Length: 298
Image 1 (cartoon, rainbow, N blue to C red):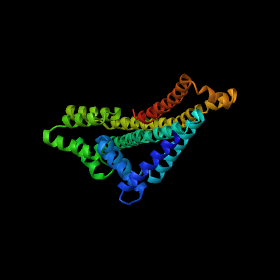
Image 2: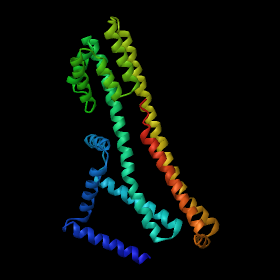
Image 3: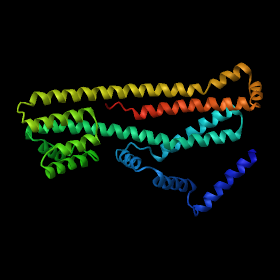
Image 4: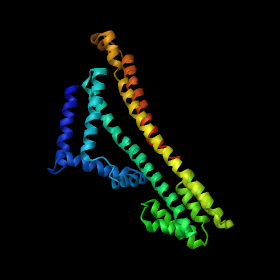
């Protein structure tokens, strides 16, 4: 069985090399993976990843290569010390590497969400400060756009707000548009206040807007503290999850390696051991999903 696996790997390598027309096999694999990603990845993910690359937060080829080696190596060790079977080692290594695109998606989603939150903070804060000078909501928006403090996609959406305001002659539709795109607490509150001021013509708004700026500062401070706490918890969570894989070492110390290998002759025991691996892996993936999706923005 082992010989068949090795021969299969050699055949795949030869086919890939022949298909690459003599170019570097590693480069060929990277290019093919990228082509497949561009065809299958959802548009929203492509947009997020492009922005992450633009921000300089995307992993380099070297970092991805190290990640692949670590994942494959760790999964191979788990497969070996759990089953002492080369086929299982190869399968586990392949599964671990196959998880990397999902983790990349989660990481990009978190980084993009954090970027959007920071942009929304800049949008609300600067709009309030511009309004203190212009005394007009649309003029305040134009001042924020011209200041160059915003980046896409928030910048483009603010420009759309301005266009909608001039087209309709009021700010109601533009506010609805922005609220639907960025359903943040501080955005809705600010818009509601501007809507009220515009409709009712309130004059003494300086204190109200100053209070809102203070509220935004408190919210942002809370978000950044939460982000720091989550990073610390995430690190501890991953360490704990990885240590759980070592439970099999304890079992083998208690039973003895030879006795443990004999137990693996039972199909039920083998299935149970696979179950332990997959449950622990699922536990880690759920934790990664929670950490990357619940960014604590609101």
